[in-house]
Image 1 (cartoon, rainbow, N blue to C red):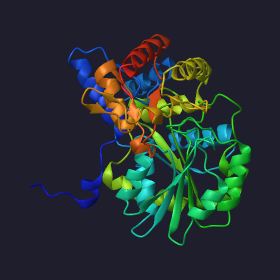
Image 2 (spheres, helix red, strand yellow):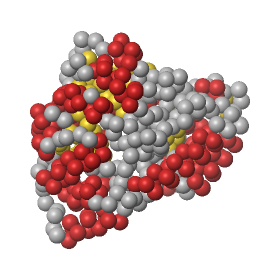
Image 3 (tube, rainbow, N blue to C red):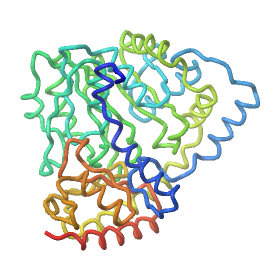
Length: 399
């Protein structure tokens, strides 16, 4: 029997990617599946960004670059952080990677070790815990209730901190809940963290997909957090560049240098052509962002209305950002369809895929097994058809 590294052996495949992969397999088999599983904008990358890639190819920019990205890309990231977040970083404090996920994995592996705890407010993106576990550290989950809007409450954070606590991962707008921390919540969290030496990691991937007032950055609210803080971001969601694989981290230069040493061994530089496209995305016209946001805002309203019409689905909190809804389906747990019993979000998602040919993601790996996550990064037509199918399938369940 094949013997694997114990940490790798313990890691499950990403639940979101696994759900999307199963939907893809069914489509290849000729089944009409509507996927509400993937966290991927259905828009094309804006033309001026694609043209920048064409120009880079024509100019022969196909060689290795510096491990952490070209000087031009780091300067573009520096400009973006100042323009959008009012944060000042210098190039040695910035690293570009093959997607935000790689930047996070490298930084987490550089900062944490056996015996350390990293606080993860839940529900949380499925990969946060896996990345912490792979570093040898231990994820410490802090549940955030529906009543709190799925937001971390300062007292819960205070109680979770121990002598072993070395880090915390924050994500706003949130995947999977769509929760967005406002200035008051960020200020209260900053008060708890500012006088600690805990690494404060801020995943800002969905920052431009927010339906209310654009919230200030945690490190702008409390600048002292920057000395033990890391910013993570990506071009995937904002510029519809998921397949281009480009993300970045910014933080104290010693931490970024350590992540760079790791990246030099596990992958090297991010794609050279993607870097050229990323420079254009960050520094060129930003006109494409508003139409995408307006489309997501329209879909958000539709999804809230349609989810609340499904018997057994509860959505007390309207998502304020990202492009996910995270309904509570606890009323359906224990129901049956033939010999199948619905025991949690995962089994409900499997039932809906089999019976309705709509792909969702169960909430189990997000730390919320009484929920399912659905993405509205697809057309209004697909959404309406998907909800019609889900309603018909749920009506078949016997309670």
